[in-house]
Amino acid sequence: MSSSDGSAAGGEPGQQEVWEDWEDNESSGFKSLFSDARFSSLDEVLQHDHNLTGFSLKSYRAQHGLDQVCTIRLINYIRTAVGAGQDPVPGLAGSQQAWQTDDSYLQPVLADDELMFYDWEQEEEGEQEDGQQAGVSAAAGQVQPSAATSQQRLQEENEALRGMVESLKAVVLQGEGVSELVADQSADAEGGASAGGASDSTAAAEQSQDCAAAAIDASYFDSYSTFDIHREMLADKVRTEAYRDALEKNPGLVSGARVLDLGCGTAILSMFAARAGAASVVGIDGSEQIAGIARSIVEANGLAAHSGGPITIVSSKVEQLAALPAAAPVDSKLGRGQVGGEDGQQVDVLVSEWMGYALLFESMLSSVLHARDRWLRPGGALLPDIAKIYVAAADEGASGLAFWKDVYGFSMEAVRSSLKADALQRAVVRCVAPQHLLSEPACVHSLDLATMRAAEQDFTSPFTLTPGAGPKEVHAVVLWFDTLFSERFCAQHPVCLSTGPSGTPTHWMQTVLVLKQPLTWAPAAVAGDTPGVAVAITGQVSMARSKQTHRSLDIVLRYAPRFADGSSGEEQVTLYGLGVHS
Image 1 (cartoon, rainbow, N blue to C red):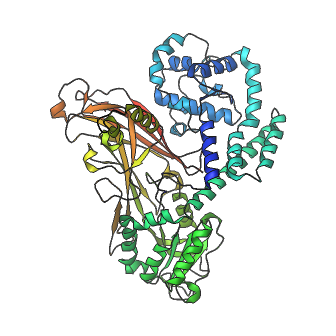
Image 2: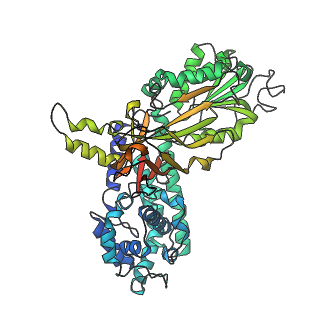
Image 3: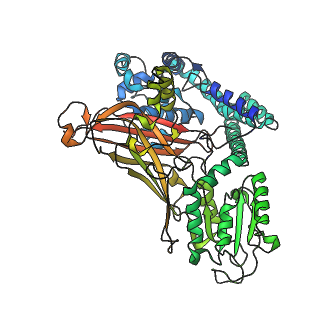
């Protein structure tokens, strides 16, 4: 379930333009680690931070030998501490600190953080020159005394201002009703030096984040109230027929059962369940408009509960639903007098088409897990119940960038360069032809929806990719997913819904992670001792729900070439976003 433009939100055109303008303004320039100041160049922001606090990021990198990954962790550690009104300096003293190995600090605190996207490896020579300049004193573990006053003032300001960015987003998104929140934060700024001021500011920041998340949710559900996205999903035969077969070809599971269809949309899955003999079906959708359309569709097909059919449609976020509608007293799989247990508040089957781009974009899985824990009876079935994420190496054709090299005999390199720069910050969603893959896929993550915790959506997994032929140039890593209606619940007819390049294309397409620089590889027998020709790519892929923007996804790719003699080349790290635009 994903919007066709790679976002999960729609909204009014004017509102969307304003929001996009805001995002452009927010991401312009390098933002200070210690204040709200922004600068057009890296040197300016580093000098500003050094003058303000005595801390030199370049010097600290050089003194502690930080690579790109540790630098990303350092940036996010400092931003997290400053944002919480804390002094980050004690955590920078010594050679081994907890943040240096904590992968949670690979998740960006600030959206479009230019300091994170910067290629720090090219700064090493400059860092060596800077290494003797004033930075953080490992022995003292404190900011230089001359900067103490500035640091104290900065902390007081941050206590009041750290929530302002999210508050301003909420103003843009919601308009009326949020001005009071900004006023409250302004009041906090006046008393930010006190402990009470810091506490009030924290509460205001949390409130503003909730407000922004609610606005994104409203826009997200509104995007599914338009019919184009539903036509696209219904016309996706791989998707729709997989769900149809799982429901209709497993009568032992569905016949006589009570079914919950989460995110029901046009109610197609609810109607499949009814046609398969379900005794009762509850369809839930967060869009009031599409829920109304679903009721009309169900009624027109003679399946509405009020006219003797099995289907009831509810408009609500599942997290806000207090109770399921009552079910008729019939024999149920629970062996009780009423479907769903004594109070009708449990279901036998929970079905949902929750998947987004790269599987986890849109964060709807959290709602499925909430519904599982709240409504699914012990031993009840989840459809689908298994999800797997795969990666594979690919050539330049996977990204589509090669098109611009020769357009009717003309080079459009300027376009290609611009698109590549954007692709190094935002994952590309497009259909990849199987001939562009250069390796067998590697499974990097598997989710068991019946038992998993919500935290398992965020993960870091290693992978190794090897070439099938060569020498060839690797330009990208392609990511896709499969979801399984496994034999555990669909014993009569298991189903696999695959979104991989080798199968029939789906509306999810594939997610392309473009590499900074292509690398050449070949099978070991071909590569031999040829300099610069790798025989494998090893690395890690991390995926996490964005802390900055609700329903967005952050992907970190960390990789290095491995050569025939067992040595490895320079490691590269890139952060890619899949963002929600309101």
